[in-house]
Image (cartoon, rainbow, N blue to C red; front, side, top):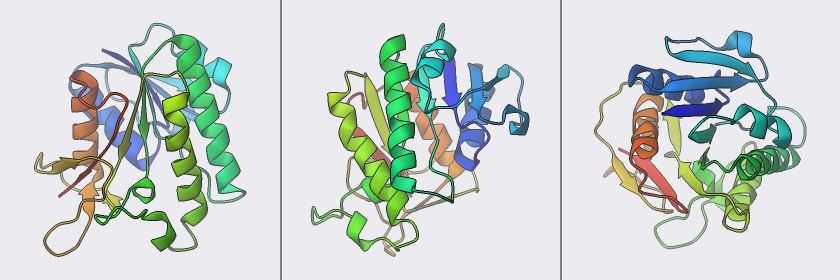
Length: 208
């Protein structure tokens, strides 16, 4: 499989890159700063701004699927930045005629009672989560073959265990009320989805 991975230098993107390459997939690892990408065998670096839909479409020529892991930078208007990221990714995927898998955020999910998690988030991450939720809600009307994969509330570097649960649009927590996943297990589940899609046109999530 040939994958255009946008945001390949980030914490989650770099794990997806390593997982996909280890399984023998050809990855076009894209970033604004491709020199920051740790390239495994079978991958090539691509300079790409995800907000440029035409550039995304061009970079997607010859690939089977586009994966975007990009989130707003720490400064500026995160809502507007996320809107530009989403618009570029969707425009590019639609123009190229390629499936789009979005690495989303836990803040876009619902609580078990059906209420949105968003109002319960800390103020410092609320703008980014608000923008990501708007991106998620725009996907069904985009004309793109999309999938939205939201992690657990806490995602950080850790072990690749292969032991996790997959759910829908409701935040998953363990018996202690903790919602967490390692970036390595998240990457494993994401590449599983690329190889054998089960959630096209859906939101799904992961946690221990």
